[in-house]
Image (cartoon, rainbow, N blue to C red; front, side, top):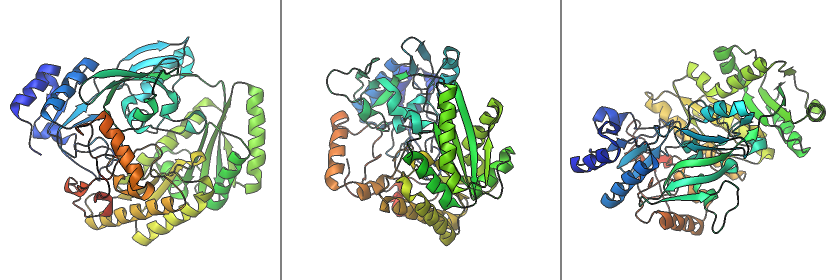
Length: 487
């Protein structure tokens, strides 16, 4: 994609400063993909505003000249949502990184969207508060990206996903106008667009600031590891825990392949012989409440005969367990340099069946697949490992990914629990929604963005092929061949 005209670049420089407009081939190449390296598209320029006013000015220039724009945070997304697939510019929000206020009385924080998720918890901790959504990329991902994808995380089984913790948003509309949605009190007069904007992947405009809810840090916490010789037994155990009405703060699953990878990377001493490992965390306001919950949990678990039970005896041991869980995907790098990560959510009762199908799919296509996921939510994360330089392997990986999605949808699953649709899964939306449903979604997009400039051709199926932009692979595959209704 050619660079923008110099006259337009000069307008952007006037809006944000010459230093913060990037247009050389080398600078643009840095922004050609997000965490999903299968998908690539080089923007025509990158603009880095510092304030909402600068974002507004940049968007107004885009609106005047019909230039598509894509908001981008840390680039940790996994669905191609922050790619300039239709040309235009990327508006990088990294400089908007201020924690404007932490209000311990109302238990809220007002932040700019370039704030890294973990930074907010670091600053809230002295007040005895925390921000509950905790994606595995928490140390790198930004709150703007979390809001765009409605990110989840390890502790969202009990505490909810991003939308459950957002009170208000400042939004720059696609024509450059600025408005606030929501409030600091959860009281909303008139139409409530808050839940519509969270998870819309920047297709309705650019969120620049947010008021988020903070919660008291749990005082009493217990973390434990359960190892199983049989994956199906581990899956039945998961369902039994939820059926009993026990809602752990976290309930995570790792398969044998992932356990071995984590052991090699972090030396945490997970049971090497286990077919499945569950990490479970309980928390409560009182020690008695925690003891009661733990006793009940152990009684539910016992009939499924875990081969090993480990309890974190210190905070250091607890932190190490979660460090290993959050670093599981990085640990796969010891086998192959890249991964293709899916994000389907299925009914928990089908976990064992679908996991067996995923294993069979991996064997059939001769690819390595590691499963580590939010078991309590039924939010699967099969990681298909690959070498980007091996074209034959890439073809097998994409076919395996398609079959995994089909397996999840067949049992009543959905395409994404927290990573978004982006361009990666947009072709599959017509398998999940009727043409009438998709038309209504497209109508809502037009309501906010009649010119279709805000992150165009994301989420909904469209007629152009993402494969045309996928310069790294140039693979013709249903995943990259969009079809159905378009905006």
